[in-house]
Amino acid sequence: MIAMQGSEKQHGTGIDAPWRELEARLHQERVSRNWFLVDLARRLHVSKGYVSRLKHGKACPAATMITRLGNLWKLDTDSLLISAGFLPEDVKRILHDHAVEAVALLRGSFSPESVHTDVE
Image 1 (cartoon, rainbow, N blue to C red):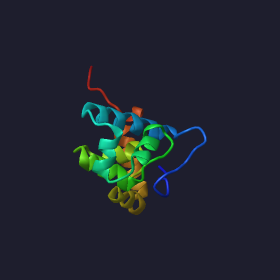
Image 2 (cartoon, helix red, strand yellow):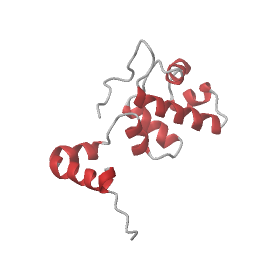
Image 3 (cartoon, one colour):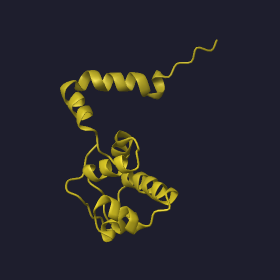
């Protein structure tokens, strides 16, 4: 996966597909807490305008902002990062240092062809 550089990435038609899942999740979390945009902005120490751009798909949060959101809401930050197209640093290192073994392990464990049923 390719991580975006910088704190925002603008697109003419809004955010890319990986960000849509994250956008929906963040909206769900904010609404479930009855937080307005201004509440979230205050807790993250960012402007309401920035949070609004995130909400409307005009900006994509950097990995550090996703981590801050996960910590704020006590969510698994790895799953949030991955859903946004980022890989956690330790996973990047593992993939870099052990590319062949890591890819083989993942494909062997999670590809549809590797799913075995013990039903006779």
